[in-house]
Length: 76
Image (cartoon, rainbow, N blue to C red; front, side):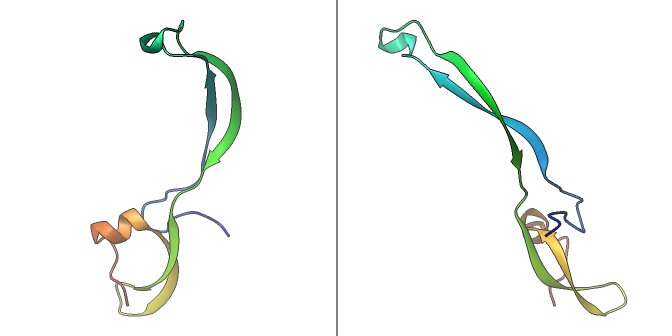
């Protein structure tokens, strides 16, 4: 499945998951240290819904939930 929103253009982006260890300074430690960073992808919340186009036709499209909630698409 191509996780790309047809309205806003949202797509998966690459990033990192940061892992810390240690005890916080507040509870008597020397603070949190960075252990490692693992690569990961952040996937958008994309749903396949029936959308009414400008000329009145109905077709299915991948649309992000943020676009649906904002009212950027007219559901059929």
